[in-house]
Length: 564
Image (cartoon, rainbow, N blue to C red):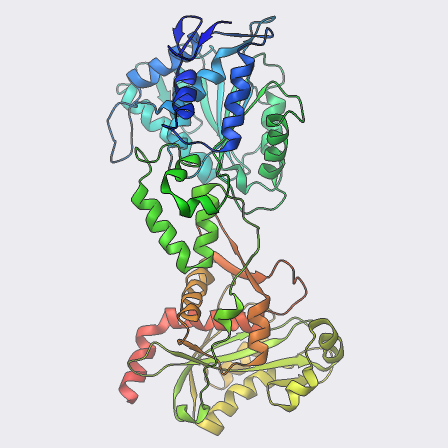
């Protein structure tokens, strides 16, 4: 076929694909090497006799979107949907390459890997509404994701766009089952992990969102099977990078990159990947941010990314989240939490300085193979500094085994007063309660509130209740631990906030602690990636103490201030 990179035409018609490619070639638009490789492959395919390039279908859809579709979210609510150049290029390539032999559309599957806040969900919603209105009659269009809430995002966006397009419901109607075109029998529905009867559908077009969260290919495989009888199905996988190791997205990207590099043949897959070429280039020049963020400057703002990067410099968890979500740099599912330079601060204090004081407390109750950690948190009037006083417990049967596994002399630490050994195979929780009671008997330190995990807590709670120690459960999940863990991290990095008397078991636990991140950027502790059998109980009680401080800070500080 004939194309001209000078006047940007293919077969005599203006091409947004060539316009995009030309802008990249001139340095006006910056893309990563993976997308550049994809575009160069497509340029080469313009010379391949296997394909024809007919832009009619793409032009119709672009025209419909820019003429009839309106934005629904601020600050663009009610404004015409003017597609970005990259969006027009994607639509054109997806719809225009066709088999010279069958005349059917070449690309059946698009993988669009793009950083958050670049308008990907809105873009796909506009395409789905367009297919509903002017696509093939009788098309079943599906919005899909790992969970129902995520699937709802695109579905609700389509519904809102449809409402602005068809205000009086002349052409369409919506009910609990989906959105329906009254004249061409096409419809839009949702599909998620919770959806019953995933099989037996007849899907023409599927948008599957945020696939980085999927551990398996159950939903995707159901969609692919339902499209097996179609000559020209569309399956669009839109996502950012994520934290699930060896999940569905990882498998898809490995395959896509093999296709991209010519290591595997699949002419029906279009891998459109907005990725950075290295982490270093993020900090060299903000112009490079466009590689993962093609809509930056128009939709996504530079100052937003600048703020995110500032947060990332202060917090390891924020850094992991930003690199993954804003720059599509894959992160491990488990990441190291604190570097040793932040753990060791050489701060010391004498518990006698807190005689007749009030404390918050946290307890991590062990299974038979773990340590049990008990800890109090103390603060003084007018100071941000937190003081930890702690004690550990271990079953007698695990002392020798634990010493070999952990490289720690538990017998020596017992003699030095850091650990109590419980007779038998399990920690005696009465010994833990006794330690809290000894704090009062020896130092006059009273527990204001105690928090504990859910593991085997019934007998422990009963004893606390008997001694009048108010206590509550702290569920060890993202919702409860994230803010506390981030606050503790920030205090450790401040260098002079967290004083734990350089307890050797605390240091051991902190070095073993990693963290995992969820899709909302929340974190929770876990064992570091290369230390699956190591203890983190001390880290957990530090974080749990911060949870208790967050829950009762006003009441606790009022008590402390009134004592002074």
